Length: 67
Image 1 (cartoon, rainbow, N blue to C red):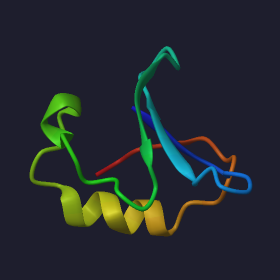
Image 2: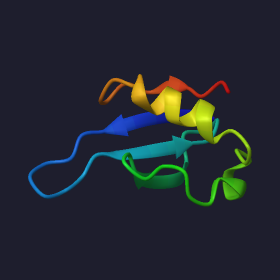
Image 3: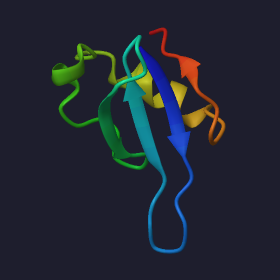
């Protein structure tokens, strides 16, 4: 699974994208509210780790999600 942080403009907030191994979009959520419905993506119980990864992400840089 891969993660990327997308910069918002004006009134549009920053977003987080989760993509699978073929880079197909599997989740898209606001960066300031990332911890909803994580069970859908196989990340339940990893809220703290995911929040730490999101806080350290650079905008526009795709990287593997390893938590």
